[in-house]
Image (cartoon, rainbow, N blue to C red; front, side, top):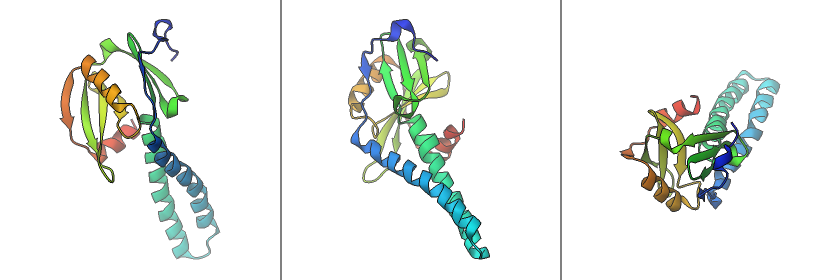
Length: 173
């Protein structure tokens, strides 16, 4: 989807924080480990080594899916608020571009995401009961500015509880 002509002048643009290197690191490591676990499993002569390799592959594949297809696609996004629209680009701003008019965003809610040493807040913009944009305190250095802009523009549905099950459902939807 191309950016509309009248939305090229952003009012507010997201800025990544330094913590972005952590999910990128996990994504790179798991991307390397996937073929290593396949090689280990295929070259093993012992049944127990093969079973261990298969289990390791499944664990690494799940982590890879959560990091690459979940976190980096849905949360490591570039967000530009313009006069009329929200322009969202996945995968650090180099992925697909989606444009949402302010009129189509019905509300937002916030969620505390579990993390160490402290949990972080994530604001989710809603379009007709569907989650369309995740604005995460973890990923954005200017989160407070983004939060202030969102709270001034859209209806607040309050705080929602975090669910790992729902998060995995979002990854595959």
